[in-house]
Image (cartoon, rainbow, N blue to C red; front, side):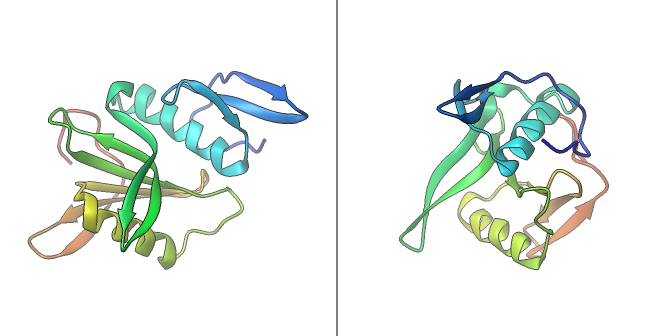
Length: 150
């Protein structure tokens, strides 16, 4: 798999039925190793190891219903009160981050009301803080560490 613009990690990878699978420490199971999954697993480790978010506050591919359609957030991080804090949208490294990527995560946030949005393809990372009073978001240089404000 491609080297990403995220800290290197040790992963449990094995072959199952002629396909590579990677262990997801949040879902506690092996999942098919796709380019998007490669990014997702790096982001999970980044959030835990670098930003110090507890794994117990994370959900991966959390289902939600939006306009009668079932959607899934790539990674959802909750605060200590159990409310959404960060929504992460992961794309494969070859997928360019576009306005459509932000539109997708912003639609999810209409329902979830998280404080931060994080869009990445593993190479480029975009962090936004939601400003509910002005109904907009502000780009940040980095995501705040767990327990701090930007």
